[in-house]
Image (cartoon, rainbow, N blue to C red; front, top):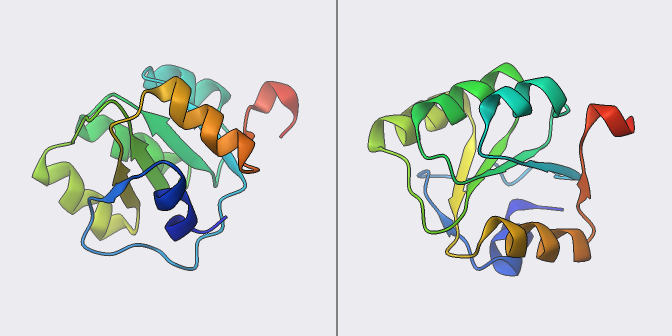
Length: 119
């Protein structure tokens, strides 16, 4: 699924100056705990989180995550957005809860990316 489709489904705003329109998202992982993301998330997926600090971008960088979607109206600092842009990570924000966001994306075909599930 393309970033533009994800934006429409969850009524998200683009927070980085540009989006990686070539990125095809098939899997996502939802968590506010970056230690869980590092322990359980797959590489090359989307991160859904409400933790709005630069550590989320650094975690995404380590796992080659191309898109971070902030929920609950959270917005990272401009320095985190600049870092994401520099690293080629698309950053989105939605007012929806993590539960609502995950459910809508699952309904649209995005699946959970969890190494415990073999995905």
